[in-house]
Image (cartoon, rainbow, N blue to C red; front, side, top):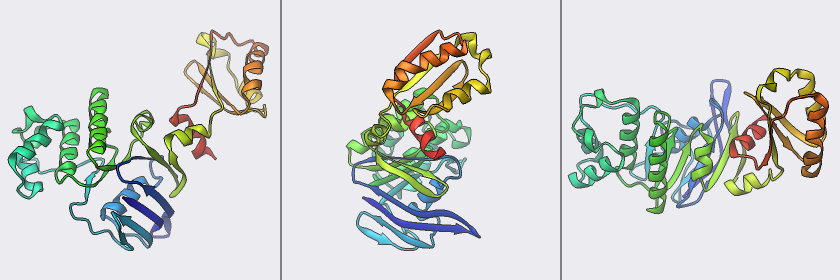
Length: 301
């Protein structure tokens, strides 16, 4: 459905995108992740035709574009902060952007995005979360083959996020291909078939979620220190990080998170090292890494 080949874009002397290559198959949910300023939004705007690019190629549904994409109804786009005509109602706005679609179809979309009871209220009275839902409805209005969503859950509460991702999975099951970016990596891991990790305008890794996680099959040890967090000092952290079989050590709240490259050494040695430091360990658990931990490791390389 979508292929991006060697996409390059600069703003003045600054290179924003550096030979981006992405492959998104039809009927897939593709999670696009990276820190703010990494190039996610610029890539997405290039796909939907809101910005040009110097070189490279974007192929959408078999058609190649080499400068700026001119989209019709093939792509639906939900920007991070959608804007509307505040004096309109949701029903009026979606009727307007639909080009006069059947009212029943528009009402169906309004119900799907959870705005049925607010369909006749002025958009100016909507909360940010409601506007995000309306933006989702506008992106869906022409039943596009490809949907681009930039931080679609940014204004939603946890219940709203679950509803939206259930909707995204339903859209995929109905035949849409979806590209989304979000800083909530648990959501990406839960719904995506494939992911791309971008850093400073370059794609570092692109694969299925399962394959990305499989590259980091080495376990993580969570060490709960309780009130012992006050005993932690820089020397203790350096002592852990100096071990060749320890890949990464993070300290957050009252927990040490230790990613190891050698599971046998990890299980046998970590508790011994901690005992030598005198830290009051009250919990010790082994688990697999999350996508967020893999992402943090990738972007630190």
